[in-house]
Length: 73
Image (cartoon, rainbow, N blue to C red; front, side):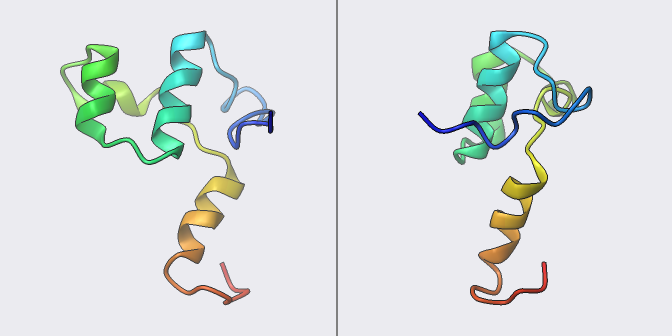
């Protein structure tokens, strides 16, 4: 099993519970915000956002979708 893209980021990226790690994993895999809200039973998007902490690599990978093959990220 590969290391999740949000793992090992220090205090900011450290999951505080299995549920929080799960929200990040679902978000990194492309789950929609409304689904993350339903899963976590949060009523406000900003509450879910606190727990979603993708790594720099995950953000870079997302950015690369805009310009595949472009080394500038």
